[in-house]
Amino acid sequence: MTAVFSLQDVTLGYDRHPAVHHLTGSFASGSLTAVVGPNGSGKSTLLKGLIGRLAPLDGRLERNGLHQRDIAYLPQQAEIDRSFPISVMDMVLLGHWRTIGLFRRVTHDQRAQAGEALHAVGLDDFDQHPVASLSAGQFQRLLFARMMLQNCPVILLDEPFAAIDPRTSADLLKVVLGWHGEGRTIVAVLHDLEQVQESFPDTLVIARELIAWGATREVLCAEHLLRARQMASVWDDRAGLPPRR
Image 1: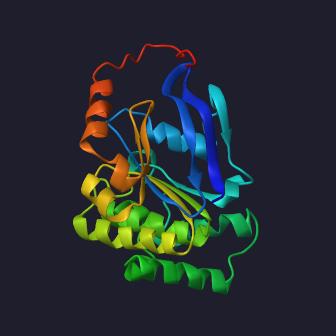
Image 2 (image 1 turned 120 degrees about the vertical axis):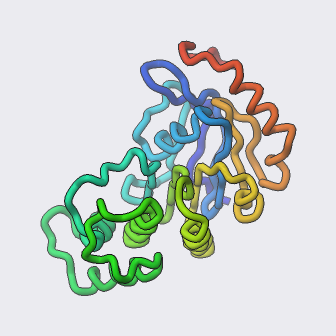
């Protein structure tokens, strides 16, 4: 199967301090992969490397023909400024950015598509509400609606179900599984291991370096999770770029 992202001995980090190092593997086209590991294990850093916000400190990361516009990226909610005065509808319409650009008008059909996306995530009556008035769960539904309009073949999600109510989490998981059913490639950072076991066919376990990567039923096991926790207990955040193996 064709690889969307290929990594060969990749190290990612900040100011020459590695957060993920010596990672080798690939994400297959159409795959649905959970990324799990202890807090601070480099999961978010990996997504930023995949989308191109971080260049590798070492190694080779290939996007195999993907352009930036082909990747939809959802960061953690804490990284998103919600204070900007914009309505729910206007924020969803930003999902059309890749097709309308900076100066073209939004068409009637595009606005209708935005309404359909809001309906799909259960925000039918919120189109004129200010974004700042939404709860955490409602805001996450809004971000998913915007990604629907982006219509990208590759979707990267950083803790998409964190700090939201169980019903919203269940509803948005259905959206993710629907995207997977359409053949999109999805990589999601997750903490709920039961959710991973039930819904994600593939899993990458990292603790700044690769612990295991493959079919969830094989790699999400007590041995690998224990090893990840043990490695987390000896991290040195002051360490520089590690040597090649």
